[in-house]
Length: 94
Image 1 (spheres, rainbow, N blue to C red):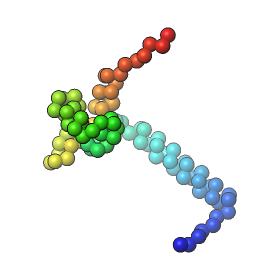
Image 2: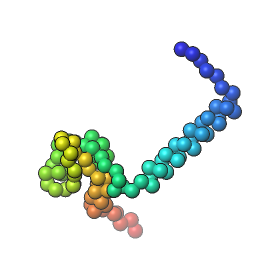
Image 3: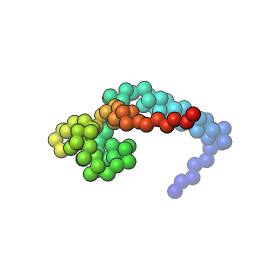
Image 4: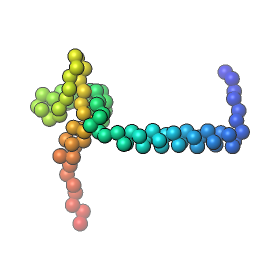
């Protein structure tokens, strides 16, 4: 294994550039409309924190719309967002 050393100023500049790139990537992802984002079953399960079986029940009961291409199933992120907003319960603190 080879050890590479940097001067601290050079290292700080590299870290700053990485941070700038990270912010740009995050910003561009947020600018993408949710309607353009499609999630597969695994991503949707992780997002909603539900099992594959629960997600299947959502499909069977027409709770979430989906698209099927061959054996692969996709969900629109905007549909998931809309579903969550529709079932949002705001607390009354006041």
